Length: 129
Image: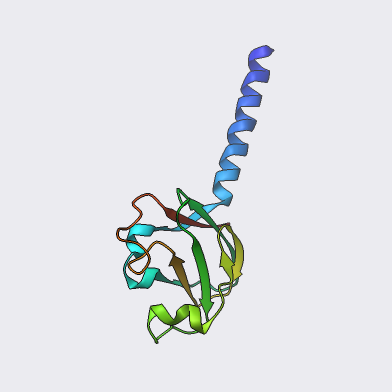
């Protein structure tokens, strides 16, 4: 009887852990060192056929701040002008709903204009689910 209960509990726990990890999928991981140049910005295009919620979570970013900008069209005026053209929709950790075919620009505060070297450990993990 004890073995049956232990087996059932183990099965339920495995199913719960599988369900939780299946809900949250890593969409993209942005490393600070990859956006050191380009004024600290990197561009992502969000596809799909309907709006979805994306979660932005910084890791090892004690010295680095992350901001997210969303545009209807590709920003053609040079990345360094993005902050003059719009306010970020998110700064730091959080979640936002992004419509399909939007252009998203991620800003990393540790970049060629603010630091002598890239942060080798900071990253922003974007998940959806």
